[in-house]
Length: 74
Image (cartoon, rainbow, N blue to C red; front, side, top):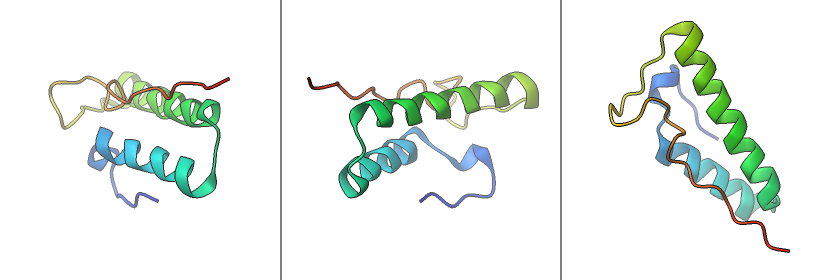
């Protein structure tokens, strides 16, 4: 769990760790992990467009832009 007061406090590393922990501890499937990543990406995009969110890491517009997708194993 990530406890923050403001969206700007969330980093790509934090969300990667959150998703990784869900996979390891809760045993979620890669598809579910990718849905979580996609939902977070959309949340940040909404904040950028409607609330003037600015990513603390100026190298990225969206903090989730660099979050890697998990490979689906069949």
